[in-house]
Length: 138
Image: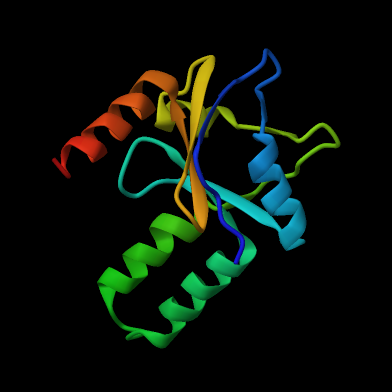
């Protein structure tokens, strides 16, 4: 099973490009799947998922009550903002302005591995999130 583990620091360059950390890039390349980004529904960060996870989400939507408003809101919230990311030969992709604004990204970033996906946070917010998460288990 391919997984995104650990945390890594990065930056957004002047052309709005972000270099995916090498271990995450290796996981993406090994999967041979398309990669998607969207606004997190839980936090002010961005989530990056492989197509297999997106496909299973869509399948779960389709298996639920077609007339459910909650199901429809969930589909709209995720799928309407979902974007495929195109990774260049140097392992970079462009983060659009609307995604940067939503997640309050500035120059410094932190990538947080979550197993089947990873998140991209503004560095200070992401470090705070990691600390809060750890403190909840004390």
